[in-house]
Every structure is written in structure tokens, then in C-alpha cells.
Image (cartoon, rainbow, N blue to C red; front, side, top):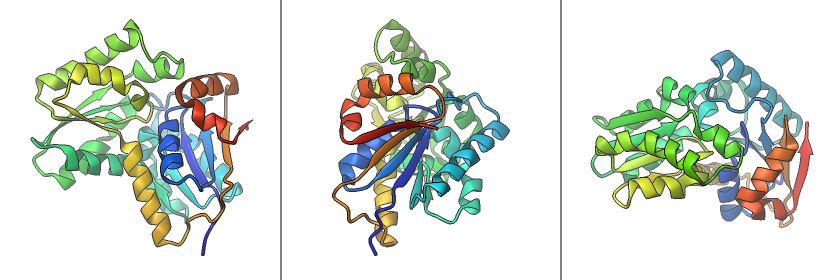
Length: 266
């Protein structure tokens, strides 16, 4: 049976729009509700208790909106809260860490993998656990990138500030001989071109967003949840500042906001 209910997608801010971009490209007929928790961005420096409080509030909102599946488009929430949330809610739910780990293992040739992530994601050891489970003996180097999300949320996608931060975070990993670098926060693909200028051609960048959408597609096909509508609704809601979210969002992914997006706030 086909299902035209929306998919719920959430992140702390604009980062999850990288997942939205891939969802629209792969599943253009699907409706979705994107929730940007801008009142509490960034998530990376929050406590476990705070993260659980925020994400359960978002889950309650999605349940009221009758979503058919949820993509946790936030590496921090995927690492810290998702294992518990999956047991509390009876609907398909997918984060970005496991798909990202699988993509990294499929990409690496020398088993040396770097992870750029938030402090909470690094402290959770989620990427290291998932990668080592798939590739025993892998050498995983992690870096907590505290400067990235505030800059990206402010729309700083170029210039010396973001270049300097990227050099500080990436260079030590290159010294360890990595051949694969996971962008372990959905904000980071927006600055992938900058990161690539530092890594050069010898290091492959892994964006978990694409693999996450691929896996959600498989889940929905297996459960007969694909949409029949050719006129999907695309709704964006935020918990805090809507103005800055839409300003940065249009700058980053203008086409997403121009394809029938319904702005809103809660």
C-alpha cells in the first residue's frame, strides 16, 4: 500500500538540509517536514539530558504530524539518543552514523579513517564502534570541530576563519595517513570544497547523507511506504529564529526552498 504521509527529518539547524537535498534528488515524490531546532543549536556541546529532552520534544511533534518515518539528520542525536528512541517509537527511524560508517568502510583502502564531528559525537565513540565492528583493526582518528557549526549557521562558508578552522582540524589527520575522511556532522558538507583543498586528491570524503537516504529508500520500499503523490509538500519548521534559518538555507540550498517549500515556526 502506498503512503503519502510525510517523512520527518530533523537537525539542530541548517545542517540536515544536506539530507533534504539528497532526499529530493532521489525521492522527488516524497513529502517531508524538516524540523530545525534552531533554539538549541549547536547540539554538539549539550549534555545527554539536554539532548534527550530536545529530541523527545521533536519526536512528539512528528507523531502529532503523523509522519511515516523519521530521519535523524544530526550526527550528535544519532550517536547519543537514537539507540534509545528506536525502542520508544514504533515507526521506521534512521540516523546518519551507521550509514556513514558503512560508507567509510566501503571507501577506505588502507583502513585509516578520519572523523570530523562535534564533541558529543566524538565522546560517544559511535563512529569508532560502528567502523571497528565492520572493519576490525581499522585505525580511526577523530576530531571535535567546535568552530565549524557556529560559522556555518552564520553563513560563513568561505574566508580565512573557516579555512583556518579546517586546516587546524584536518592537518593532524593527514599526518596519520588517513585515506578516508567522514564528514561526521550534517553541517560539514557545506564546506566540503574547503576541506577538499586541504586533503587533496589522495583522501576521499564521505558524506553520510547520501547513504542515509539510500537506506531509508530501501526501508520504505520493503515496507510498502513509498508515496503515490506527484505533488509533494515540503515543509520547514524551526523552534527558534526563522529569519536566520531561511536566510542561510536559501544561500546554501536555494532550490530546496523554491520547490514548494512551506515556511513555518513552532
